[in-house]
Image (tube, rainbow, N blue to C red; front, side, top):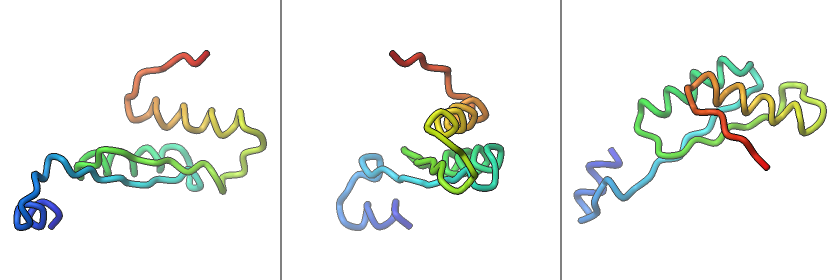
Length: 80
């Protein structure tokens, strides 16, 4: 629908991004599956919400994001 609309209005569909959202409230594996589904649908960006799964402290939120990233095959990145 977005592709067809873009073309109908003279826009290049390749220049239009799509952002999906996933959450870890049901676990990191469920979030990773959602990220993969968005990727398959052509999303250019995906936000992962770490609220609502019982994390206490920022380290738990970062660990959840790192686990989702690992599960979807993103390379590990060192932060300084």
